[in-house]
Amino acid sequence: MLFLELARVFEKVEGTTKRLEMFEILSSFFKKVSRTEIDETVYFSQEKLVPSFKGIEFNMAEKMVERAIAKASGRKISEVEKLYKKKGDLGLVAEQFLVRKQKTLIPSRKLSITEVYEKLMKIAMVGGAGSVERKIGMLNGLLTHLSSIEARYVVRFVLGRMRLGIGDPTIMDSLSKAVSGDRMKLRPEIERAYNLCSDLALVASTLFKKGVKSLRKFKVQVGSPIRMALAERLPNAKDIIKKIGKCAVETKYDGFRLQIHKKKKGNKIEIFSRNQEQMTHMFPDIIAALKKQIKAESFIIEGEAVGYNEEADELFPFQVTITRKRKHKVKEKAQKLPVVLFSFDILYLNGNDLTQKPYHERGSLLKKIIRKGFVIRLAEKIVTKDPEKLEKFFEENISRGTEGIIAKRLDSGYQAGARNFNWIKLKRSYKSELKDTIDVVIVGYFKGRGKRVKFGIGALLGTVYDKKKDEFKTIARIGSGLSEKKWVEIRKILDKIKVKKKHARVDSLIKADIWCIPKYVFTIKADEITKSPMHTAGKKKNEPGYALRFPRIQGWIRDKKEDDSTTVKEIEKLFRMQKHVSTRFRIKNK
Ligand code: AMP
Image 1 (cartoon, rainbow, N blue to C red):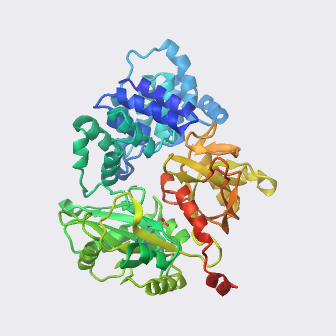
Image 2 (cartoon, helix red, strand yellow):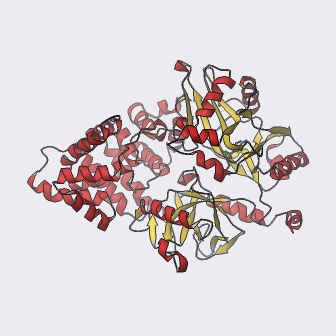
Image 3 (cartoon, protein in one colour):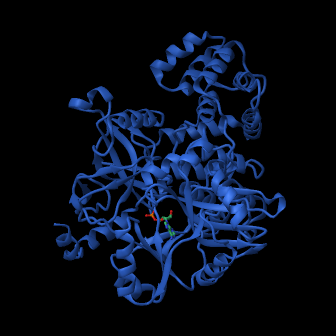
C-alpha cells in the first residue's frame, strides 16, 4: 500500500469534527491495508515509530528539520523560517515548498508505507558523532521522494506533532470492525492482548496474520510493560468493607508509579512509567538498590517512587518528586533528591506469570524476595474486615501527609489495564468539600485578559473522559494555580499541539480561543462539583452538565495519558458522594 494513501487518510481524519467519522475512516482503511503493513499503519496512527517503552526517538530539533526541508526544496533556510513563522507548522511549510519543486522533479516511484517507515526508522537509529548532519541528509533524501501531502505528515511525524489525537480506543474499535465487521466483537480480545504487551501494532499484526485465537494466547513477558491496574473509588470505609469484605489496606503514596522488569538474561533491569514509557535511565539509584535488595533471577514488580527529604526524614509531595523526571544531569539530581520505592505488587517471578494468582499470594512472594534496606521497601499495609480499623489507618495516613489509602481484594488476580473494585482508593482533603482531586485533559485555552494579556493565555479549558463515547467533555475553565512563568510555559507546550478547530474527540459548547489535541493531563483541586448548562460532562438532553467550582491547578502536567484522566462516570459518582461529606471533617477544620 502506498504511503500516499495513508497520508490521505490522515488528511481526512484531520478534517473531521466527529469521533465516529474518525473511526469509520480508519476502519475502512485498516480493511484495505495488507497484513504485512498493518503494524506500521498502527504505529503511524498512534503517532509513534515504536511503542514508547522501547525508548527510540528521532531526536531531531526544529532547526534540523528546517534544514532538511530547505535542501529538499532548494529553498534558503531564511525562506523556510519565514514561512514557518507565518504558518506555525513545519509540515505545512514542507508541503508548500515541495509542491513547486515537484513540478520539475516528479518522483519516479511512490513509496510504500513500509518503505517510508523503514527510512524513518533508519533516521531515528542514527546516533553518535556526526549524527546531526547524517539525519538531516537522510530526511532530505526521504523528502525528495515524497509528494507534498506525504511531506506534510512525515515532517510532523518526525517532530512528534502529527496532532491527529486518534487515541487507542478508536484504533482498537477500528481493528475490530476491519476484521470482524463489528466494532465491539473483537474489542475484548484486542484490549486484553494490548494490556499485556503495550504494543498495539504487535496485537494488530498478530490478529491480521494469525487470527483472534492467537490473541487469546498472549502472555506476560519480561521487557514488555503490562498496562497497569487502576483503582475505583468509594466514599468511606464502611462502603469499602461492604463491597469487598476482608481486605488489605495499603498506604497510597503520591509519586511515580513504576513497573520494574528484570530479565534473567544479562540481569537487565528496565523501569517503565504508568504510561509505559522508558524511565530506566532516570533512576540509577533504584537500579543499584534493586541489585542489592531483591533476591530473584527474574521479576516484574510494581511500586510508587517518592522523593525523600533526608533533613526532615519525610516524604516530599508530588510537585517535588516530579523534578526527578529529566533527561540530563540525572545522577546529580538523584544525589540531591533521593527516592524511596514503596513496592506493592509482583506480577512475575523466576519464569512464572503471577497475574492470575490472588493478591495475598503475590503479596507474600513479594515480601520474601525483598531484603531489608533503605531504598526498596514494602508499602505499609494492614489486613482487616473492620471499617473502624480501616478508617483509623486512613486517618493516620492522612495525618502523616500521604494521599490516603488503597484497599485491595485479597482474592483477586492482577487485572492489567482495568479500573475496577479489586482496588479501591479513598483520598481526602480536609480543606475543601470536594474530597478528591480531579485529573482533567486540556483541550484548548483562552487568551489572557488584564495582567495576563502579555502571556497570551489566561485560562485552560479542562475536560473529563467519556469512556463509552471515547470523547472529552468540558467541566471547567481553569485560570489559577500556575505561576506567571508556568503560564508562559504551558502556552508554548499547547501551541505545539494546537489545531485549527475543535478536535473530533472533544465535545464542547464553549469556544476556546485556541484548540489543541486532547493530550496533557493536569490534576485539579476544586471546592465543589456543581451543575452547569455550559458544560458537556454528564449533560443529558434536558439536564445540565457538571462543572467545577473554583478549580485550581495542582503541580504540573501529570504522567497520565489522556484516556487515563478522570471519567464522566467518576464525576457523577463524586457528585453523589459530596453530599455525604461527614460534618466531622468540616467542623474539625474550623
Ligand atoms: P489515582 O492516580 O488517583 O487514580 O490513584 C492510583 C495511583 O495511586 C496508582 O496509579 C499509583 O501510582 C498510586 N499508588 C500509590 N500507592 C499505591 C498502592 N499502595 N497501591 C497501588 N497504587 C498506589
